[in-house]
Length: 338
Image 1 (cartoon, rainbow, N blue to C red):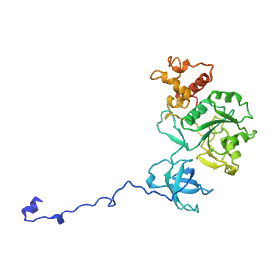
Image 2: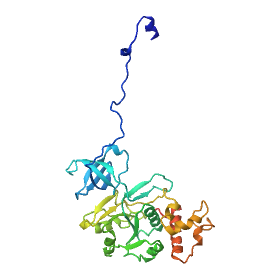
Image 3: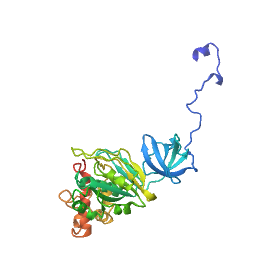
Image 4: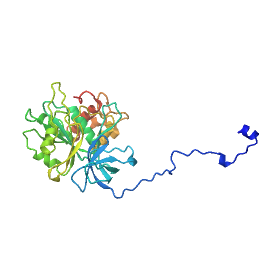
């Protein structure tokens, strides 16, 4: 510019070029209201596509997540608002634009060191924890961890014991008596009247190790579900017969069951002992007298734990023993993997 000025040239605003920005549309945080959205429940999720059954329909429509939702988690069981082509015709694709607040959420982590929470299911009001009493043998650590996840996730747990034709389920069921957990028996030769009475009118998630008979149970409850079943391998690890969660409507529109994939581990990195004790009002009040840093496991680790002052023969005292088993399962990595 100095050289041009010395040559006698002058400049005005027309000589200045302004490079336009990448976008000329003004930014806004306003989002469309989508007052015309139709609501329904997410029943399937697979590779960026969700199946949604609208309240006004019986068949699922295929949906994508709207851009304005960003990375909002959409899981099976979620209540969502949908716009666009909701006809369900072949090749049609609607958009999920809203997700209602969840009433409950069941989380797990890959292990106890992984901070990433995986949502197993949303908005279930019951969790049916399916465990075989033989072949494979029952794993109390897994059941205890599933109970913890249900308690802290605001989901009512129910223990469902299968393969009762192979051995008496009573001893295993008695391990959970003091937690006031409902137990039902659902062997292949057992009637399912009690199970149906419990799940009718509810959204019930099913969870369990592979090979415990979960898919067989689902097929008995929903005859047209056609869930794949398998056998337990010789090395003690069941074949994974369900690979995706799916919500299935019970016959007679009596409710929903959500079949989840068979899993081998149930990490609880997101749960603290205080979360577990907070579920039980009497125990939560008692541990307020515990010293700072108390793990509530009792002697020798915690010789001054206030839970030890509770009469061991009382109902609350027996619950202390049962809840301490949950706390031990929360800390142990040895009992819950297949």
